[in-house]
Amino acid sequence: MSDDIKSRLNPTKGHMLPGVKIDDRMSLCALPANQLFQLTLDPRDAEDKKKLAASKPLQVLAELREDVQRLFEGQKRKNVPSYAEYICGLHRGADGMTPPIILYSEEPLAQEYDDSGLGYLQVPWGRMLIAIDGETQLAARFEASNIDPETSETNVPVFVVHGFSKNWARQSFHDLNVLGVKPNTALGIGMDARDPLTRVAREVEAQVPFLKDRVNKSRRQLRTSDTDIMTITALRGACITLAYGISGVKYGSKPAMVSDSELPKIREIAKEWFTALTEAFGPAMEDRENKLASASTVLSALGAMGHSLINVGNSAERAVKIAELIASLQDVDWRRGKHWEGIAGKFTPRGVFSVGGSKETSYAVYDALADKQSPAYSQVRKSTSGVAAE
Image (cartoon, rainbow, N blue to C red; front, side, top):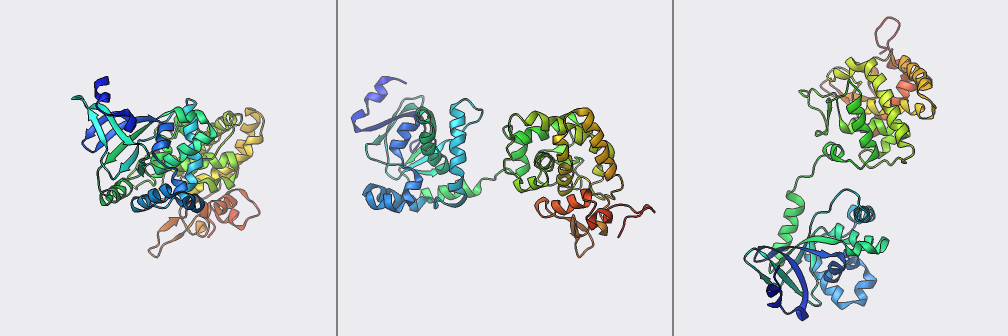
């Protein structure tokens, strides 16, 4: 970027932001977080009554923010600490990235760009910009600077839009937050390489022969026409309950952390347990239309049955325990029928068996599969005549 471009703007008049011109009122810039903090406010301060009462400039900015942003509360506020830790991790070299923050100025800003589109945008001293998108990241960057001050030196990508009315900003806020389609849970889990139990699930899928290339990583639920056995969400849920026991269903799609020291053991046991399960009950898992063996709530319960293997010291002893567990399941009638009603789900008025969600039914399914004292234990198993108890 040539110095003569910069010289056309008086650097004593405000912040000089190097960037690329998108159009006359939009630029893409990269600036250190420290400079970003001088151009914006921590969104949480705009709703802090004490700080508002003590600062007239903050009051003015808060009024503008109220016109073009939502309240900084609920899940948005709760996400700040974890996002801040994520930013600190990126600074330390972890994989990942953050999207550009979109900053807004109702007043036009001075700018100079050459024919290639490179140049400078100038924000007058004292002028504050509002984040109309990326506000949670902005708050997290303020928080990250408290955790690790060195993150303040990190360059942050920002779009700066200026010279638009507040009506335009409001509409843009709507479009950016409403029109976009978020990926479903299965796709998000399938893409996550950081979550330890997602990695375990992917390794199980890759190394258990029956499951290889048969786990759907893009759908929340399988369609009747799908040839896959299960979703990555369901398999991950089973890996979580293997690690935590049946109480692991509480995590759902949320992160379920495992220590680095425990992870290799969990990975090895998961491969052994799911290999044994699929070798014993593969046909029932394939018959999704008529059987329950690959339903997510059943998989969570089956994963939890393998939790007892965590404390078995070596593979030879685990093989004996696995054989015992598989033998205890041999008489289970996996067919969708009345013997599962009130345990794994219920019948619709049309007579179709509807499987319940994992959090709602996994405990009951687990008791039916593992607890000999439960009435459901015998209810879901075949009688001596080979017919399921009704």
